[in-house]
Length: 450
Image 1: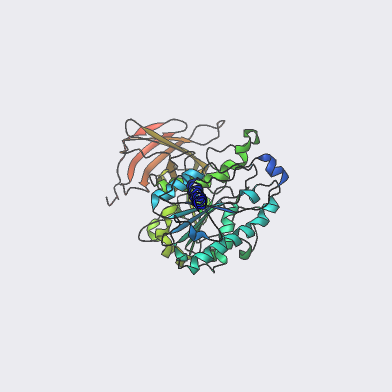
Image 2: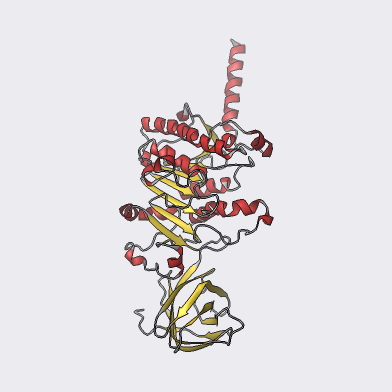
């Protein structure tokens, strides 16, 4: 009897020790990718109680884990293709920022065994199997009374389509799906049943950062964000000589942009627009026509615009970012009226100064047309918010160095801030000589209501 009690005590101590152990994401390497891996799905549970120590959540008996609270919202974080087998570098920060936002169950879906394979098409096949695994778990949650509307699935690349397949199995009753640069290869051009689509959840959002390579090109959600046009991201290498960053930087930028939205210190406004060109031309800055609250803020807080977005079905939006955190830019709509006899074409460089700091932007995405008494508009996005603006510098160039220098006679230039509800800045009757910087103090616009 004594021996039996000792044995039971030791087993209880062993089980308690195991329960306290921290689980980690499966860590593989290139040799696993070359040989291929069979699919294994592990669910790593984080809560505010164990924010830095993951607990393994059983697929068959998830409710035996005392940390798993069905009355709390649940967020599933699903990675994508892992050609080198290493865990995502962003995983820990993502979990921590989610838990800082609210008390929830964060479930990291570790399918690294199955995602690590040099054969991408085999990994694509596994996405359906991962979705079936998650469907089984969520079905158990539903049977125990969980609110499917409180489930948020965040999928990166292939993880976005896994989220879609899972949501489709519940006829779109899952609350929210966030797709971070959803995978394009093998999904571009596919019908909605073969990829993520708006019917997969009550609210579906997709961020595009690498649509010309690893990402999906067309709209997939109720709102789609095209950062910097959706393809090349600032700060990412443009040549193959930069190594692995050339292949993954644009694609991975989607995660870091979303992380910045969780941080909340530098919000990014997303402007509904039909094209990136129209956005750059300043044609889509009137946010009052979108909702009384204006244009949506990209990222975690976009759900505030959910009702309006659902009315519009699918909304394409654009924004620009800096090359590193803080990613948010500060925009001005620039309107120019000239009084030259002849029409001129050219580019502008604008610099703002508060007397100590400066912010500069080159408006060179296309040659601007300056026609007499016709207002030309363009969007100027600065890398920082310089306030108050005490001086503005302008430089005009045609880009045609061998021709005689031009002079641009400005009847008026008006800079309207797009954030912070600040008053527009103007200057009247200004002469710009080509390639010569002119600095002036702005004045309140004569037609301003401020």
